[in-house]
Length: 168
Image 1 (spheres, rainbow, N blue to C red):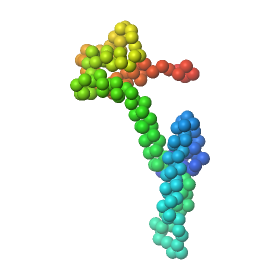
Image 2: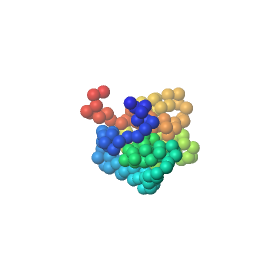
Image 3: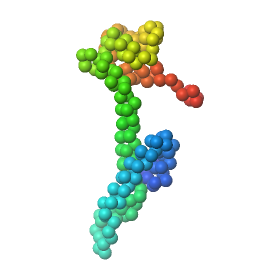
Image 4: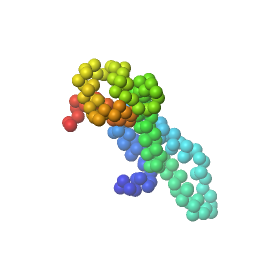
């Protein structure tokens, strides 16, 4: 069934059910509008005029156009992925700013002193033992080279509090 959907289209009730389950109401509204824009654009292409004699290609196109209310899966997927990327970038925006400020030589890599400055500017840890613990994880061999990606991974896996409702 999933293979058929990936090659075809989603009816409105289907894509609405998916995004309703996946996103909060404000994100749902944003995505709903994007999907409706795609559907409206398909309708507005004005390709719904039937002719007496049509080629096979025109007949196929007409059949597809009759389904203009359906959302092509490829459009659904692109909109979802673009939305998630923008949300991820917004989520990291403050950290990006702090990292760039801390990375004084702008090489995308920070050393231990810069790491300590980063932690201090984030105001999330003030305990030397915890800082040393994080340093042991991110730079166990004291290479003095911690990348942005490594830091995002470290902070997301060791500092983001778990949801108390999460059964994990």
